[in-house]
Length: 225
Image (cartoon, rainbow, N blue to C red):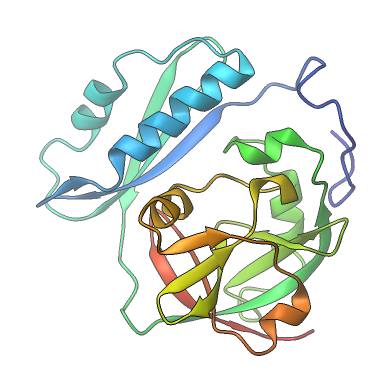
């Protein structure tokens, strides 16, 4: 693995990869069940096929067993290793208040748009951890990463959305070097978001949102460094 923050260049899918697992982070609500479950499982299966992982077995059964008897919302973490073995862990989850605004900053750490592993959610997190470590928790709630072309890609744990109009958001293309987020996929399918490149200048006079499947869409305030 290169030093944290270093750009990774091409060929990532063509040579042996370091050991890692796929991850899905879901929200469980006692009254309604798993949020966006179909999209999470579809992404997991698609990622496993692309990377040559063994197909996961009895994922739904393990998820249901993990939340059996839960009377409050849960954060559910599902991992899948190369051999097709899955592990499910849970933790209490407290939803954000509807009027929450997260303070975000821009990382010096850059993503490499040619690194195709950025398109799948894995335990390979060094570049995101490096970006997050650039700011103290009291300085930023989330940190956004750019690629080598100075295009906005994603946050360390969120997808990025820019308000193009009252009812349409713009989100960066996967080709910029970012994860195919589940919330992002849902909003695109619902035609509430469309794909388009985003640069820093675009953020100066537009409303910014970030979000993921666990927390939903969050209003964001960019703090210029």
